[in-house]
Image (cartoon, rainbow, N blue to C red; front, side, top):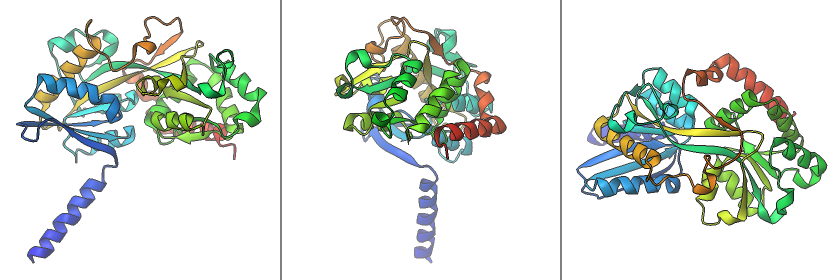
Length: 338
């Protein structure tokens, strides 16, 4: 009987673990830490690690359990309440807004959050700590500097001029499964009709579809792709081999994502989570703070048309099931051309 009970427990635990599909999990801090803070995030570990390390320097008695998952998995985990995470960090601003709007986030008010600019906070529940542009990433080995497209129309013209050169060698998000990809695509359509023309051209050239920026960047690195569209530029500049890539902030308009954090309603350690939020806000927005984003992508010094996505209920429009299905149907028609 004891073995039967143990077996059933193991089966249940395995089922619980399988309910959340993760990409990575790492623990930071001392094994004997008095407090463990559990973070669920879409940010690659190597991208976010500097923030964790700096926090632990100020809080040596704390350990961080850092789990990476897709934006859809992050949202599902917080909605279900089956996983006791203390902080949810995501690049999918629309999904984060929905979680907060649906009452699944706790309010957090502190000196650090009250000092934030209006665009970086919503309802004392969502806190933005990076501004990350969607860029066109190009292999420097495949282009001379003068031929690199500087905007979407340049890219369309380039692809039409040399279709065989680029067939199967340009990549973008699969917006059906990528929360950030869907956010970028819907925001592109709001900003310009050029997006649909570009998508049709990509479809005619058998564009490859990806889940995430890091995979697209790696494909450009290996030569599988020559160009990747709507890639997080911050993921490129933080690589050791960043010099191998050209990063284009399109001069027709550059969509800017705000990476946000929220404290889930079911957080086990909301006060410590709030302390981590305050640390992020001071580090990201303070005059002397070290940012996660790279100075080469400084949006304050670029002469470009910025399309900064605003946090708020306006982001919920394309999460309506009918609107989402209509958008995906049109997108599939353009990109798959079956």
